[in-house]
Image (cartoon, rainbow over all chains, first blue to last red; front, side, top):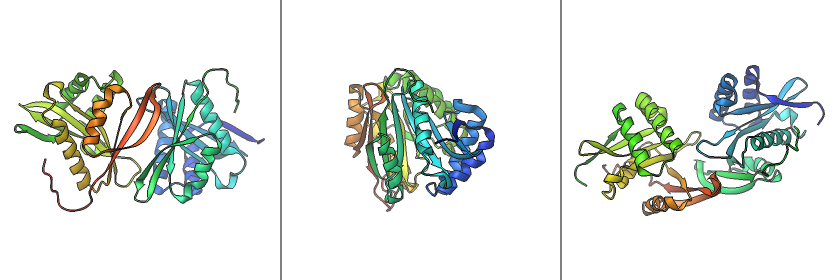
Length: 169
Length: 169
């Protein structure tokens, strides 16, 4: 995985974040719009916005991003809101690197539990497999949540507590 | 239930909404704060804020309130965010009236599914029983969600489709 670096989002990444969200084919137009709005907000206010955006850079280009944040009104639970990798840059382990970074940052902030929500539709089977491979377990399924025939699956991972920062992204 | 009327929230109800939230003993300080902030936002922007606040009035006083809104990025799913009745005014059916109003308004806006989240702690047993009596079914339980030992229980109700507005709050 040489040549891939991870860093916090900057204001000039917003366009690339929108481009990648669209390019994956996993975001509907409204979701692309929301991802762009949140990225803009995070570019302005940083992590204080509640949306921690981190990007993966390869060949001086944004190759993927992850967005996570503390779940409001909880102590120690975090939401993994979005993760996307440029279709031209997939199968290089960029998604794994972004997830590891997110989990490590969450753990350093005393996060205990990470939740990810995704669709039950067949299109998202690879997404669900991706989370399962990373140790996430299905904890909830609500049929027809997003729309008729489009349920919500929630995955959770309990993070190991304490200790030093063993993984260095 | 004579003498109880329901109406949309007005700006001068915000203080009462905060007072009732505190008085119930079911909101922690952060939750009281958030309820107040959302009520303020709704007083400014109305339902366009995403938070539909409705109040129950008895003897010219706010006796309870409900807050609900469309779940972002879904088609037809709504969240029932908060419901609270003044402890001095409980057992008069005010909670039922507020829930019926919320469900009816949701249905008129083409809502199909209503979700309510609450704590798994023993304190909230009456809350969970209240939702069950109204036809809500437990669809998800995530241990340690709010805090260690404080899980999240999600209840759902599929609303009857179409037809005229049969219930008049």
